[in-house]
Length: 449
Ligand SMILES: C=C(O[C@@H]1C=C(C(=O)O)C=C[C@H]1O)C(=O)O
Image (cartoon, rainbow, N blue to C red; front, top):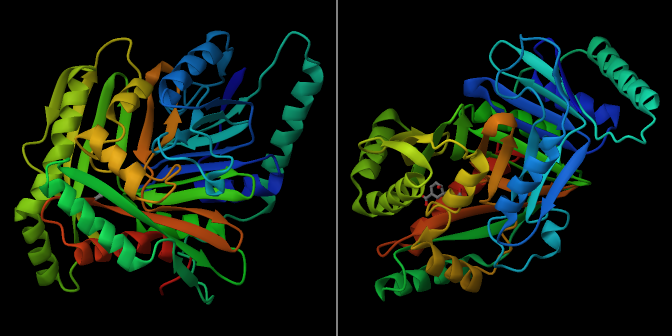
């Protein structure tokens, strides 16, 4: 049973903090400042957990079943269009080839949660959805009273606390102790070996990732981290998924797929260069990136693969003529927007199944590149570079690729970054590029003033 009520627009960060105080269970955060869309969930009315290579399609089947007998009420017509009604939030692992380690305990291959409460907003409307799994034996009056009590506590919390400052929290004065999970030289050797394999014709591109462990004296502040990320990366998807004492969180620039009324939007995002320190240097670096054969090459693998995947799902696919520059705070990328009209009966989960992993995070051709990642990377990627996002009714939803991200637990965090390796990649430059990508979470956590 799912009921959506209109609610005043509130800062999603604030709701995230209030939900912690209400003590209703694990929290979920999703927002992209530029399109003023946010989803903040807490607690669990139901969860779909899947395993193995069929983790996405099994989730799609389970979601169809869960929806079949649902009673869905919307107490107004003045509600956000795509996020009202039952919405599942969650994600999937990057792959199911690499053995999982303790690092990703409680993050199954596939997990979609129907939260107990979901605050959701677009530019000018907000809704609060209350979900509950109810069966014929339920003491419905008691259940209804529990919901009323929760809403009263939420309303009281909204009235009695003031909205947090919209200022970006200052960096912490904490000392970070950082440690490469694989020594830098070893990672660069791996890149050099991948280049050899590519030159020998084993595959054409592979994305190799690395991880850094960060520790400080006091627990990291997850709420302040989300606020820093949202303020520094307004175009990024800022997300957090809590599983007990752990949060998987980040600010990713990469949309995997957005589906609204049968229209899907995705992008090829691959090819990177640093930002310049002056406007001239920045323009120069951007122009170099746009005209770099190496970067255009690694970008084209992504465009071609996405176009081919969509051609079986869509009646029409539109690909921009050439990539443009996506300029982020400390890095710029090549981006090609891609859109399509989904064939009737297809949903966002089918699009994810076909698109993921794109060569932006896996490689090209897909299978030998994934085998090389499994054999050579020595890293449990878990949900890093996997799809994270939300799905609502009618096949609508949005998933991003979980990059610029990390797992945060108490005083420790494990941060991830990867780089596309092609025939003419240079191990030192790729290492430097991975450091730029790691900076997103390092600064988010309050480091690197
Ligand atoms: C793999 C990452 O980023 C991806 C790799 C890129 C590249 O190799 O140029 C650029 C953007 C992303 O598609 C990451 O941030 O960890």
